[in-house]
Amino acid sequence: MLVELSVVEQRYHAVMEVLSAGAQVTEVAERYGVSRKTVHAWIRRYRDEGLAGLEDRSHRPRAHPWQLDAE
Image 1 (cartoon, rainbow, N blue to C red):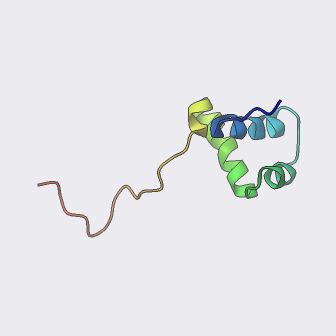
Image 2: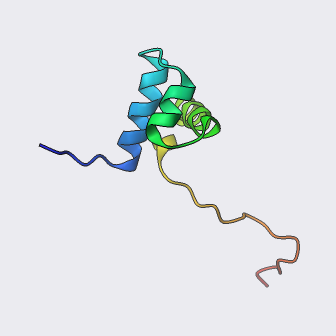
Image 3: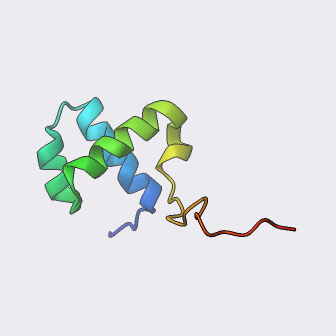
């Protein structure tokens, strides 16, 4: 039986492999098809925010130098 995991669940499994099982970040990154930097970011966000930190985030800039005021 094939079970489809959500993005958050996949990231949680990757983080737990490193934190609980002691797997190397390099191995986990390769297995999940992401960079080592990404795995480190997931670990940091999980420690800071819990499961909510593993959700997708917007890449939209918060501010732009030429942005006009709302008025």
